[in-house]
Length: 119
Image (cartoon, helix red, strand yellow):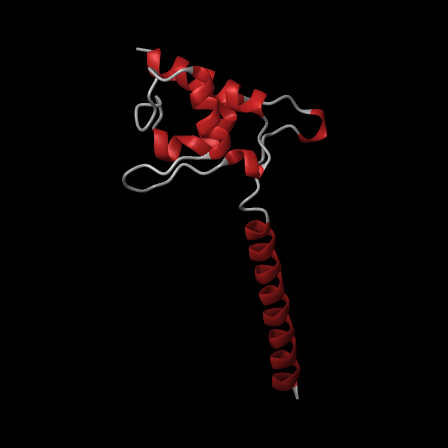
Protein backbone atom coordinates (compact mmCIF):
# COMPACT_ATOMS: atom_id res chain seq x y z
CA UNK A 1 0.00 0.00 0.00
CA UNK A 2 2.84 2.41 0.85
CA UNK A 3 4.52 1.64 -2.46
CA UNK A 4 1.33 2.49 -4.35
CA UNK A 5 0.99 5.84 -2.54
CA UNK A 6 4.65 6.62 -3.18
CA UNK A 7 4.30 5.80 -6.88
CA UNK A 8 1.16 7.94 -7.13
CA UNK A 9 2.89 10.92 -5.52
CA UNK A 10 5.98 10.42 -7.71
CA UNK A 11 3.83 10.29 -10.85
CA UNK A 12 1.98 13.46 -9.83
CA UNK A 13 5.27 15.29 -9.18
CA UNK A 14 6.68 14.13 -12.50
CA UNK A 15 3.57 15.36 -14.31
CA UNK A 16 3.73 18.69 -12.51
CA UNK A 17 7.38 19.25 -13.44
CA UNK A 18 6.69 18.22 -17.04
CA UNK A 19 3.95 20.86 -17.27
CA UNK A 20 6.26 23.49 -15.76
CA UNK A 21 8.99 22.69 -18.28
CA UNK A 22 6.61 22.78 -21.25
CA UNK A 23 5.01 26.07 -20.17
CA UNK A 24 8.42 27.61 -19.48
CA UNK A 25 9.78 26.58 -22.87
CA UNK A 26 6.67 27.83 -24.66
CA UNK A 27 6.82 31.21 -22.96
CA UNK A 28 10.48 31.66 -23.91
CA UNK A 29 9.96 30.86 -27.57
CA UNK A 30 6.63 32.66 -28.01
CA UNK A 31 8.23 36.11 -28.15
CA UNK A 32 11.49 35.08 -29.78
CA UNK A 33 10.81 36.98 -33.00
CA UNK A 34 9.78 40.15 -31.22
CA UNK A 35 12.41 42.77 -30.61
CA UNK A 36 12.62 43.82 -26.97
CA UNK A 37 13.91 47.36 -27.22
CA UNK A 38 13.96 47.71 -23.46
CA UNK A 39 11.41 50.51 -23.46
CA UNK A 40 8.56 48.80 -21.65
CA UNK A 41 7.38 50.14 -18.30
CA UNK A 42 8.73 53.62 -18.98
CA UNK A 43 12.33 52.53 -19.55
CA UNK A 44 14.54 54.49 -21.93
CA UNK A 45 16.01 52.74 -24.97
CA UNK A 46 19.54 51.55 -24.20
CA UNK A 47 21.50 51.13 -27.43
CA UNK A 48 24.44 49.50 -25.65
CA UNK A 49 22.28 46.92 -23.88
CA UNK A 50 20.30 46.22 -27.04
CA UNK A 51 23.51 45.80 -29.04
CA UNK A 52 24.88 43.39 -26.47
CA UNK A 53 21.65 41.37 -26.41
CA UNK A 54 20.78 41.30 -30.12
CA UNK A 55 23.71 42.35 -32.30
CA UNK A 56 27.03 41.30 -30.78
CA UNK A 57 26.68 37.68 -31.90
CA UNK A 58 26.96 38.62 -35.59
CA UNK A 59 28.76 41.97 -35.43
CA UNK A 60 31.30 41.29 -32.66
CA UNK A 61 32.12 43.12 -29.43
CA UNK A 62 33.58 46.11 -31.26
CA UNK A 63 31.27 46.05 -34.29
CA UNK A 64 34.20 44.71 -36.24
CA UNK A 65 32.17 42.30 -38.39
CA UNK A 66 29.67 43.06 -41.15
CA UNK A 67 29.42 46.78 -40.38
CA UNK A 68 30.59 49.31 -42.96
CA UNK A 69 31.07 52.74 -41.35
CA UNK A 70 31.71 54.27 -44.76
CA UNK A 71 28.01 53.97 -45.60
CA UNK A 72 25.78 56.98 -44.86
CA UNK A 73 23.95 56.85 -41.53
CA UNK A 74 20.55 56.73 -43.23
CA UNK A 75 21.57 53.70 -45.26
CA UNK A 76 22.77 51.94 -42.10
CA UNK A 77 19.49 52.78 -40.34
CA UNK A 78 17.58 51.42 -43.35
CA UNK A 79 19.57 48.18 -43.11
CA UNK A 80 18.65 47.84 -39.43
CA UNK A 81 15.00 48.54 -40.21
CA UNK A 82 14.60 46.53 -43.43
CA UNK A 83 17.32 43.90 -43.12
CA UNK A 84 19.85 42.83 -45.71
CA UNK A 85 20.75 39.65 -47.54
CA UNK A 86 24.51 39.51 -47.98
CA UNK A 87 26.29 37.24 -50.43
CA UNK A 88 26.56 34.58 -47.75
CA UNK A 89 24.58 34.01 -44.52
CA UNK A 90 23.76 34.99 -41.91
CA UNK A 91 21.21 37.51 -43.15
CA UNK A 92 20.58 40.77 -41.30
CA UNK A 93 17.00 40.57 -39.98
CA UNK A 94 14.54 43.40 -40.53
CA UNK A 95 14.17 44.81 -37.02
CA UNK A 96 11.53 47.32 -38.11
CA UNK A 97 9.19 44.34 -38.42
CA UNK A 98 10.14 43.30 -34.89
CA UNK A 99 9.21 46.57 -33.23
CA UNK A 100 12.32 48.76 -33.36
CA UNK A 101 11.76 52.40 -34.30
CA UNK A 102 13.82 54.51 -36.69
CA UNK A 103 15.16 56.52 -33.73
CA UNK A 104 16.23 53.33 -31.94
CA UNK A 105 17.90 52.06 -35.12
CA UNK A 106 19.80 55.36 -35.38
CA UNK A 107 20.90 54.96 -31.74
CA UNK A 108 22.18 51.46 -32.51
CA UNK A 109 24.08 52.71 -35.55
CA UNK A 110 25.66 55.48 -33.45
CA UNK A 111 26.61 52.99 -30.74
CA UNK A 112 28.17 50.67 -33.33
CA UNK A 113 30.20 53.55 -34.77
CA UNK A 114 31.49 54.38 -31.29
CA UNK A 115 32.43 50.76 -30.69
CA UNK A 116 34.22 50.48 -34.00
CA UNK A 117 36.21 53.69 -33.48
CA UNK A 118 37.22 52.82 -29.90
CA UNK A 119 40.82 51.60 -29.50
